[in-house]
Length: 518
Ligand SMILES: Nc1ncnc2c1ncn2[C@@H]1O[C@H](COP(=O)(O)OP(=O)(O)OP(=O)(O)O)[C@@H](O)[C@H]1O
Ligand SMILES: [Mg+2]
Image 1 (cartoon, protein in one colour):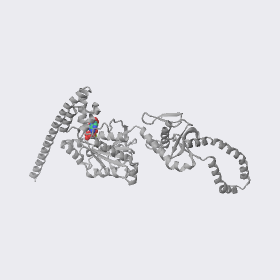
Image 2: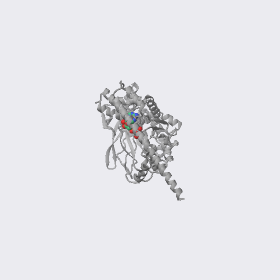
Image 3: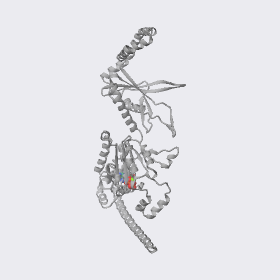
Image 4: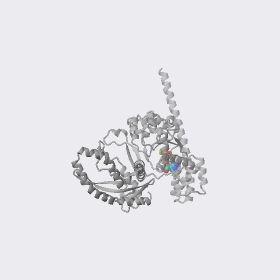
């Protein structure tokens, strides 16, 4: 928004004097009107119309253009009429008025509108400033001066009387193309950005597809997303973090590139690593960095590919679509028991099968791939797809090939750089003489950032938040945790080996029994 310059001031002066021009035109019309009506009454009607159309209309318009070379465009407040669909009331879908108001709220701070109105933003705690009725603000676009004013007019519809509000844009006739082709789209775009940045972000989760047939079906329900993690607090090697942030920046800023090359504006990330290495935390950091909503897809409650498509069509632009634990959230061959057996042994598989009386999901790998690549992803664009898994080796290569999952990010055990971030988060220290001892423990043991974070919590409590005692306790805690983990892992391995031996013996016995029977 520019400070009105000399030209703008002159134009404003001319604009405010239009009234007197109209007055002069009015006097002229007082003389001309009886003449025109005389001719109109006594000349043959058709002849008069033909003469007017041929010779006078264009001149009359040119004359008007000289007297008033300004054009106005009204953006009116959506009506209060509520439309109903079979699912209930539907809000007015034209958001232009809100976008223009949001755009002008910036101008209200800077320009000379003194009488403002403040309304609570639809979401969040902010206030949206707008002009009081009758106020105006100046704007400038590519050297063209423009004025916005807030107008209220009486609106009579049948018996009902009400008020109708407009944001009225006034500009010179010669800027008509510029305004229509470039300025108004610019205003809408900027307004949308302002509205988006003012809103609270959301974390959506999908409901069971079975509900799709009930009257009040909603594919997604949401809560406000208020996760504190940022890339600053995420424990990870600095270089890796920087690479991911640069990748996200490039994605966000390259709308035109995606358009030019005919690629849908989406990017896929595969986060893999052991439990507790920060995969879910990374998704939150990404959402906070980009200011996007999150759609957390629970595939196990989606029954068919059609349900999946319906779900995804309802996601909005500027969002991250996450499928957590892709390897076990859905067995893409439909054999859930096999997954359980692989993870926890045969008895767990049987228990899972018995407990699970839900209708089987028939979502297939091709359904999922169509969602990643298919036409829907071109609708609206600007979506990020994230898969997380603990076992990257178990995934179908088709699912994670480059182009689908553009970046594979390994989330690994806590290294020293990651520890430095955690120490800063939990104890507020950047460096300390005991850091060397911590580094030694971390080099020896495979501890996840979640393990280290937990030890830091314990140490913080026991050391009353003082760095030196806390770090001393931390070293002991980390050693203890490393021993516990090693012991638990050895036990799990021995148990798995015993189960495998037992299963092999059972299979052998069954084989022998079959042989005897024959
Ligand atoms: N890289 C990290 N940076 C900061 N905190 C972390 C990190 N990794 C783990 N944490 C801490 O550990 C907790 C668990 O981490 P998170 O849920 O992100 O792990 P995950 O990799 O998603 O595990 P899972 O595979 O079990 O889903 C987090 O709430 C966070 O406090
Ligand atoms: Mg997780």
